[in-house]
Image 1 (cartoon, rainbow over the protein chains, first blue to last red):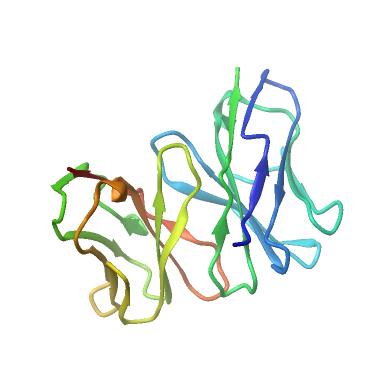
Image 2: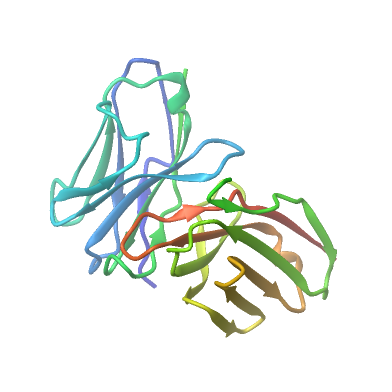
Length: 113
Length: 110
């Protein structure tokens, strides 16, 4: 069964460093998403991406964040200058159509020291 | 009022019990309702997907949506220890981002 994959599974970084989280969505899906989950809290929407551009973003997704689909398979989330409060699980998701079900990857656990 | 409310539990039941998990919501525009299961430190795994009101059954799982009451439920019959996880409700209005509940932690005791 097709699945969303994410790398790395864990990332430890120093405050102020840049990190790139990578995702490979399900191959025939057209809509891509990033969510995050701070330990013990809700899964929160960050950004959605369709047709090579951001379709929606939340208040969390400020200028420190960017997304890119550098080739036909990868979808990346970049955090330019990490803060302690960026420590969370980051989930990538994809869906075939905008109104269809979103399938989630296993997540990247980011720890900012 | 929070957009989606879900009792975080924990909920502990004996093996074989019927489990009832619930969420309430405030946004009447929500049309698509999902239940995800999340094992510790893993990604949410889709269990059930329902559009608008009504019931949907899949094996031991039944999802119910009551839009008039803004209330959704997930029932698990013949619960197993492998069902022990956190169950997240999620919903959205049309082509909009998913809004999640906080999740209910379920333990099924053998």
